[in-house]
Length: 199
Image (cartoon, rainbow, N blue to C red; front, side):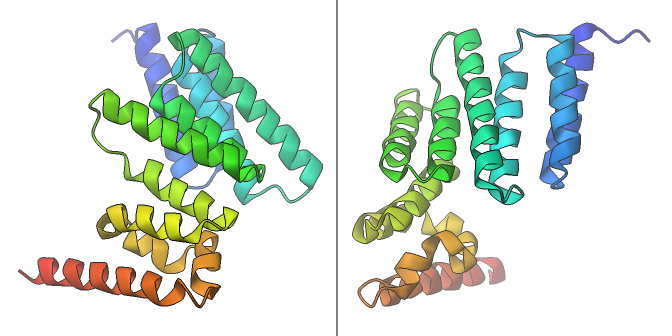
């Protein structure tokens, strides 16, 4: 059986995604770079490489200059993906929001997370819980605690496991004004999940 070029590209991209899920960013990066070698016009490969660089910068890179360099490279890849696909998409906007979030530019990240979610809704796409949850995290880090709780309440049934331990929500946990409200949201969602599981 002969493998067509797009089948090979898909296989390489899928291998990269598997490596990334396993936390092996170096292997994922190599796969996405190979995908770009196979097809330099693949918006998907550019985007996934950009995501991988930004996740690696967030999870692994400790040196601030190296982190910023990785985020700059991630932005370059996401912007290239946008150019190849003919403009912004909800996914590329979310990727840019994540990058800005990792740079600590929370106001910009918040605006981009909202723009990504709004564009996805206009396109009648299925709601991506991650768009709103990452918005919650950025709002919490920025100190917009009431807004963070309001947004969290809209996705808590799907996101309570994340919210229970996420260090990005420390400002909500440590505030005497919001800590009880956060715990109540999580407890109610957890109870609803347990009840549904037992039915």
